[in-house]
Every structure is written in structure tokens, then in C-alpha cells.
Amino acid sequence: MTEERVTGETIAAIATPPGRGAIAIVRASGAQVRALAARVAPGVRLRPRHAHHTRIVDERGVALDDAIVLFAPAPHSYTGEDTLELHVHGSPVVAREVLRALLALGARLAEPGEFTQRAFLNGKLDVHAASAVADLIDAETRSAARAALANLGGGLATRVRALRDGITAIVEECSGAIDFPEEVPEPDRARVDAALRSAIAELEALRHDGEVGRLVRDGITVAIVGPPNAGKSSLLNALLGEERALVSEIAGTTRDTIEESITIDGVRVRIIDTAGIRAHADRLEAAGIERTHRALAAARVALVVLDGSRPLSPEARTLLDDTSDRARVVIFNKADLGDAGAREANVAGAILGSVRDAATLRELRSELARVGWGGDVPDLERPHLASLREFDAVNAALASLAAARETLTSGQPMDLIVGDLQNAFAALGHVSGDIAAEDIVTGVFARFCIGK
Image (cartoon, rainbow, N blue to C red; front, side):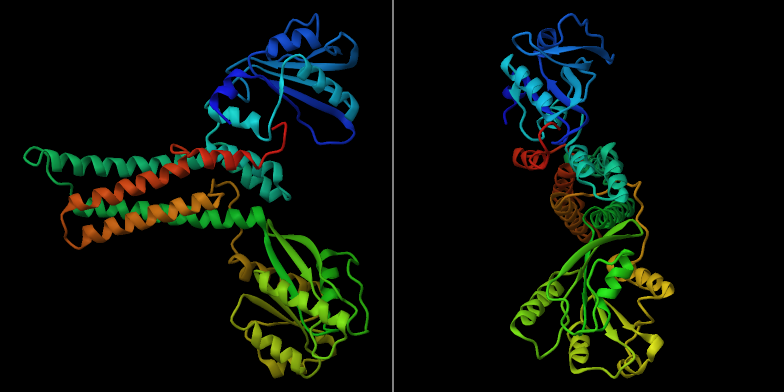
């Protein structure tokens, strides 16, 4: 999308989800907004940020609805342009007809994310805040919404620009000493090294916060695996607090994977209940076991459920061996019936209890948090990295700063660190939004729905 299109055309779209509701919002932005308002809401004298109750008509003057008209003049609007919102009754037909009238009068149908893209191009949002808008729309938990909101205020850009300013100050000092060696002394090496160590520590903290933010936003996947009749489906039902999976004493009852979600300490945990693993299975059950192996390979955490009351079966021993070198939580179920299997296995950190016991479930949730994301309760108020592009940029900056420190501490001429510092400065520009390639901007706004 070119800047000429953004500044030269008025766009319009329905800004509320499809379907019936109390209210539907039709939004327009651009230079023709006042003219459009005069045609679809005749007789209304627009006042900024004032709700006008009026009759809405189409391009031929035929009445469509009684509605509320809201007008925000440039530059004091979401997009930075004149914007118009028509709050009509929530009939899909009414909303479509109002939009059709705006298009017939000269507006163009907005592309996905185009309203927010105009806000970015008009300096109302940086690219990171714009991405946070998409995250806020996509949030599936309260924690994910809070994490997105923390990024919406532009706090990340402020934090990264402070780091860039510090790097610039060092480069300027070094450049002055290079260009005017007789007048400008070389910067103190210990002070420069301390500044670089501080910047590295800040970026490492930023990367850690970003990883936590990613977990809050995307969640983690936990695959419940184990032999038949170990209590896997009962555990899923207990974690959900409802009878989601069929429970039976007949081995092989679960033939396919079942996926549900819970929240632990603000992190969304997608739990996949899988078919029991055993050596002798019919063709249909074997297909389910194959899906179990695929789910286990893709999951961040393996939740291994075993019958702790009986000696270990060959399948249980194999499963413990196969998961020993990956992130896992082991629970020996049915402790009320005995602990022979748990004593035989002697797995460090394993949980011995019953999926029907509240204390066991609390211990299990804590262990999933510890194994899944270190057990730290996420700080949802801190701005954080949100995209792989930003992680790559921070990693590149860290590598450049580490190279500069190595040059500095090895006693080499200080002017040799300038190139690495400039590389770090440029990399961080992709995080702060001061450097935003066109393909990156396009990718950010491609995530949006039409009307936003």
C-alpha cells in the first residue's frame, strides 16, 4: 500500500464482528469524511467528539436507520485524519447497507488493518504499538490482554531509544577522539565498559521479558501421555473441572487427541489428552497412538501419567526412558491404592497422588508452571518484545555489543569498537520503530481484521 493511497482516498468498513448485536459500527477515515456525513446524515452540524442522534439515509436519500454519528477531526483522531463513526442498530443488513451507501458516495472499502496503518503513517502509533493493537484484538485470556495493553503505550520504544542514546553518546566520544586526537581525549575505557555491560544487561532483561510475554500471549502446549487406564482422561477432566473426556476401565477408550485450555498464573496452557500407549493394539487404536507420538513431539511439556499403585508395565518404563531428556512432569496416579510403581521407578521430582485429590492438582499446576516457564509469575505491566523480528534485532544488538566489549577489554584501539556499536544502534532501530522496512510494516498490518 503506497502513501499516495493513504493520503488521497477515504476508506470505510464495518468495524464490529459479523452477526447480530445491539450495535454495529461503520467507520470511515479520510479527506471526504465531512462530505460523506453531509450526504448520509443530512442536517447534522458536526461537532468534534459529540454524539449526534439522527436519521441515516443512503445515496438516494432513502432512510436506512436511526443512528448515532460521531466525528473526530484531524489530527485528533485514531488515524490522524478526519474520521466518522456511524453507530447503527446491530442488524447485518443495516450495517451492510450503510457501508454500501458510503462506498456509492465515493469511499473505498478499507483493507485489513488499514485504519491502524494510517495511524502509524500519520505518527499516531509506532510499529510496535500497532502490533500490540493486533495482539490486544487476538487476546484469548485476561493476562494476554494486559500484556498487549502494556505494549500499546509505546513503552518499549521509549526503553529501547534510551539504549540507543547511550550507544550514540559512546560513538560520538570515540569519533571526537578519532577526528580531533589533540583536542579530544580518548574516553575512559572502564567507564565505556561499564556502559556496555549495563546495556547488555538491559537487553538480556528485555529478551527475558519478551519470552515471558510470548508465553502469556501464545501459551504452552502440554501433552498428557501414558499407558491405558493410568488416569489421563480423568486428569484432563479434573483440570478442566468438567467431564470433557470419556472415562472407562476398558483399555483403549481414547482413540484420538482431545485439546482443551486452562490458565495457570496468567499463562494459557493447552492440554492435549492422548490415546494410551501400549504395544498390542488394533489398527484403529494404533492410529490413535501414532497421533499421541506426534502430539508428544510437538508439546513443550510432557505430562506423563502412570498408575503408581502397580508395578511398572514395559510401556511405562519405555515412556519414562523416552521422556527423560526433555521437559516433563511425572505423576504417579492412584496413590490411594498403593505406591508399588512409584517406588520401583524412583523418579526425582515425581508427584505421587490422585487426580481426584485437590492437593495433588495444586501440586501439579505448580510443577507445570515450574517446568513450563520457570514458575515466575509474569509481570504483565512491563512492555516486552512481541515478534521474532524484534527478538532477532535484540540478539543482533547483543552480539555486536559483546564484540565491542571483547575489543575493549583485550586492549585493542578503542576506535575499533565504533563499527560494532553502529551495528547495535541500527539493530535496535528495528525494535524502537525508528527503522521500519516496508515489508515489516506490511507484515504487521496484514494480521488485522477489516475495520481496524
